[in-house]
Image 1 (cartoon, helix red, strand yellow):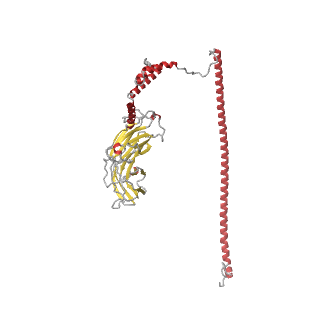
Image 2: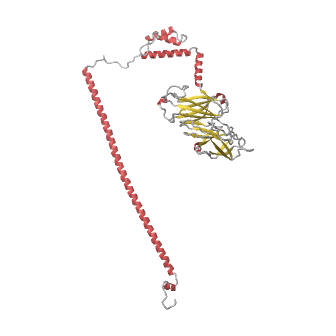
Length: 491
């Protein structure tokens, strides 16, 4: 068994937000209250074995902090996390891998601040961790004391995206943990991490109000490009509020706190790492759109300017049609030619087209011919029509009242049927209870008669045994038994 003592520090990040405190196996040491976060990784790159068993036990002297502690084990090759609810684990088979395993001690404190203190971890293994035949190169402590916080406000968009940023560090082998917390505790969120170079998903987590990625396996080659961290509201676990839904695309906002009176939820992401990291807005999509627009512009110079002109022309025509603004008296063909440019539409050709349009055959809109000229209805016809309409309304009202009465009568009949069925079921239940009571009474009587018979048989058996014993005695003893000898005679 290999024992190690280390440090742990719990800090509350918000009144209703759990504060994560991370630590790993290390040599004996004193607690350091100045450390806001302390995390360590126990990496064990194996050499000549395929699999060994290990069991971890952690002792926390502080009884107030112990209930909040959890052990987290992570496979550094796959990034699979296992959270153990107690301060000890079962025997775990750890297979041979390249990057080893990480052991973390995490404290979840939703409403309390934990004081600094010590902890002790014991590892029970089927193979030695130290010595010449050790299965690991040792327990290496990698402190993650750098804590960086980023915050922002959700802006409604069709992707339900809180943010999509690039996380970069100068060190390609750094350790990283993320925790995202929302101000609104009723919202569900999804936190995903992608490789910025290949855009492949590295890890993800989903949850309500706050989610945590305890350890992120940094892909090889991600040091220069970094990681893309994206957070979205998870509509698979909740019904999106109408105020948070929009058909507009996502855009980057530099607002860090919601304005006064706003219902938009705020968020805070805490990054715990072994080195300094930076978080910048991901401009990959904007760059892709700009590249496409640039290719169009290179193919046909002035295309963007002409598109802006056509857009302005469309808005002006829409405003003129609605009566909200006075339009230009310049002919439409001239304004369209100016917007598109003389290299695409020639004004003379456009004027010829406009002149030929009135000569085109008109499209018949009517599908039936009238039988005669229209006639104007007089007062008598209008009164008769109104009276007929009133009669139809009265008949329709009577019909609706009849339907309502029929539905009410149907409901009453159903109630009567239900009451009859309930009465019958009550009678059947009463009869069943009476029959059951009678059966149980007869069983009790029969049991009592059996007990009486057994008692009588026992009594007869005892008397019979006495009679047999008396009958088996000699003849002289039978008459003398129980009789006193006469006076003056010898027995």
